[in-house]
Image 1: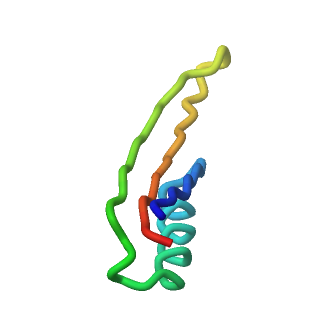
Image 2 (image 1 turned 30 degrees about the vertical axis):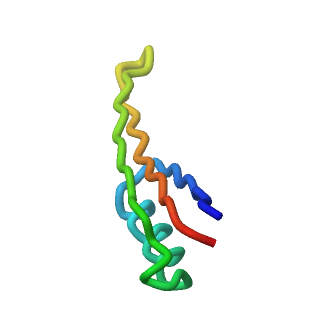
Length: 60
């Protein structure tokens, strides 16, 4: 069965840690693919907000 796990963090290092922690528990031959996305937004006070996300596809 194919499964997905979605990660969403405000900082790229947090995303890296979360994904690496998940992958450390996953057998290497079970990994199918990883998709990565970054979104940037500017709030009314002109502060820039980033959203780093990853989708891991794997076999269960």
